[in-house]
Length: 402
Ligand SMILES: Cc1ncc(COP(=O)(O)O)c(C=O)c1O
Image 1 (tube, rainbow, N blue to C red):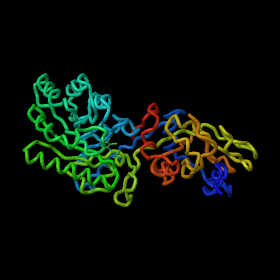
Image 2 (cartoon, rainbow, N blue to C red):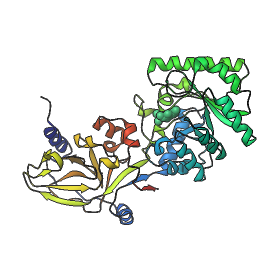
Image 3 (tube, helix red, strand yellow):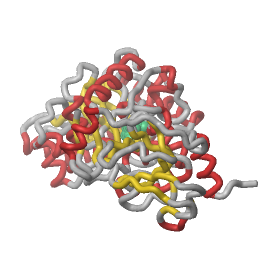
Image 4 (tube, rainbow, N blue to C red):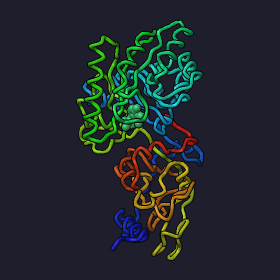
């Protein structure tokens, strides 16, 4: 029999030891309480500088010492573009940062980030002028780029640094590989400095091999024609873990830098630490009577007197709605199951037969502190992608960089 949502939740509560309703020790450390006192009653995202830097070091080792072009697109995978860049700027393994949005590239430059920044998207002429003025590297891949970038070189009176984007089968952006060689010859007649040439994989095992073969064939023909290519790069986190032959001259991970593993990766290959915590202070601790239900839909009903805690963080802050189907939240050293419904701004957890947490205690919904709240595990339990667990983190939540 397929369990109903309610039986599933009861099972989750039982497996968390709540069936026994034993009193448990308390909880939030002095440091957590002190932090909470500073933060007030809203949720926040803690960004862990040491974890980001350690992950970069580990990934560089996995890449055999090749430089890392750190992908910090989509608001730094939810952690904050500038916050992540500041945390990683100057790391010896990093060659630069890559973003997709023009606004992100400019924000990095305005924030005084020193490492090179690559913009990996399409631009209007006005935007590319603004990017070059801000010393952002452009991605060259449009038919019009030899003329367009030539014009920029003339106006700025300098060689324009670019990375050439080759489409080997993703069919998203890039100059299609089968048309790239004559176009590249044309591009090479203008004052450009080709610092890199890159592609992206579809992450479908057999086709990835074909894509790499196309890229290498293009690169060797370009070399035979004495065309400048700069550093070849192709591997995102997936390729970094699963396709060492694609490490080429530089690797280009996003996800793994933040401490999450791409699907199919063996976590024992390299130790990564989730570099963020989604946290909120407990807003209310309340005793439910037998028969009291919780939240929208009344999906959970207390079978006996049961303490609950309400956290002022919900799906509008990026915590998945489906967390109610088996996720737990860490408060102090214990995990508590999410019950009822994750609403836009609130999540409710079951404590048991004792009010063993207090208003103001810090709850961690996603983070490195327990395997149950690891981003990959939250993604697994909610049937979602780990990319969503990170990238859907509320844009407006304060980022607390530690
Ligand atoms: C072109 C490109 N390169 C690299 C990455 C990094 O990918 P991942 O986060 O899987 O490491 C992305 C992200 O989707 C991308 O679009």
